[in-house]
Length: 531
Image (cartoon, rainbow, N blue to C red; front, side, top):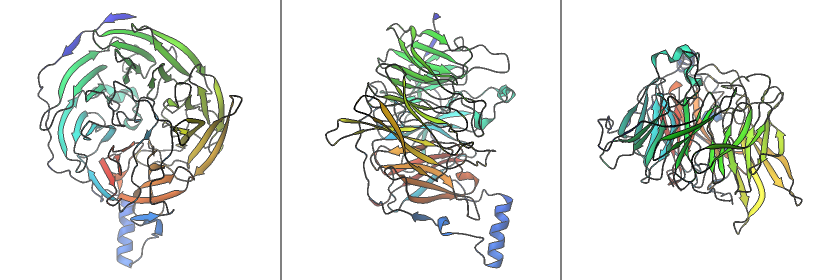
């Protein structure tokens, strides 16, 4: 299908909201349940600690790792048309590795700073060339692109994106299960946010200079190039990333449409995956675009003029049904690329009684090895895996590829989540004859339903979860040693509902030693105050 789009181009500064906050308003700690209020009152009246344990302390170091232990690795190629600061989309880079080169907090007297503007959180955080935070905030219906100071979290400028239509609740999708447009975007190499919107457009918005305002540069209307659905259901352009050449945008919709958009002319070409849906973001590399549907893993390419071809298709076990804690039936991961052009593609399936971590050849989609994860009957993941290709001291690949996967299986009822443990590391090792073997290296008991991150600079994976034993729900930032799987430390972020990050993502700042987590009432920063 080929057509030329009508495009809006704005060369002047538009009238968008400017920054409102001179100082960020912190997330309150008093948003607690009646039962928690009773327990606190009981403890105060009778001088009891209501079962408080050592794990409810402000900071607990479990393992004596207090210096970074970098992971020697093969560097992820930088996409030439995406921001270069190691944090340009929800999953860090175009390979969707969920890894950062820089070290995260190592527990050096960490401090907490937070920001709230009421109910609502941040889907994606990226960083412009000055290290400022570029993020999309949503309160469930409205969406706003924001620029924030990385230290104080003060809002510097804002830009209103289209809200969800009034009838969106009639679609039968709960707000916390929404995977459509608005929460995903990427930052390009010119510090422009490329954002798919709820109106099935793609807006290219220039990040403002100091003291300036956001400026709409261009808008592409894709409303005619999605899957037609019966009202009130509506397909959504949810993910957009640039082709490696920079001449095209690739996009995918939740109902299974894949398309290219000519950056200059707006010409659109599409290919529909009949009977398939897409739940998570995709990866872009030099050799093509890797997309995972609820039936199969694909690699697509375009012929230099935007025409789409399927290079290969690898089906996987999608399971008999949608698992507890999952948004849809099928794999819950994004596609992750690991290693160089001869490397691997990593996903999970949705098999019963245990899901499998799957490593496939990037060149042709052939599965080279897989291994089952977690406890039988309580096994599932709905967030992306984090991957790294190991290197020797000279920087040469060793043929060892590590993947971290998180168990999200559980009966969740917003805002209370009940996942099974834990976090596992699996290594795929290339043998002398070119075949691979998969081995689980360790399994951690830590829990989370959020998008965790791996710091290659500190050698730690970072998670966010609540204590199970404190009188008032207490939320912790948790560091896990990549080498051993041991919990290194946990830092109290805050108490009460406001600090619940409900399936939100973690992000690390490119300056190092700083992490951010979205919550359902805003944003928190965890920062080392001593090296």
